[in-house]
Image (cartoon, rainbow, N blue to C red; front, top):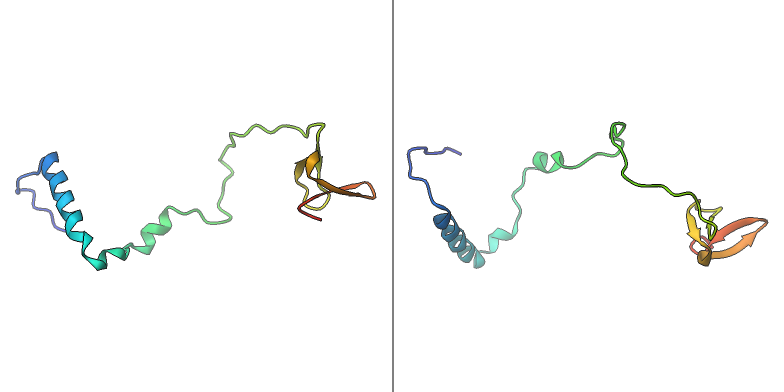
Length: 98
């Protein structure tokens, strides 16, 4: 897109007025519902699975399992005792895994 640097610049008020007028004119235009985006530009902001995150640091404090919690022997998640469904042969299983 060519830019004419010799043309007079618009003030903030002119820009706001133009924007309002453009929005009102687009209200009746049905073709503005389509998105015109370059797929390469969209992909730049996405991280791919398997990306190298070795330099990243977590800002999460990890607490050890509390006395009123258990680790499910099926999904290996830590749950509160209220989520305990069954105890099979010394193995604790949560309600979600039953």
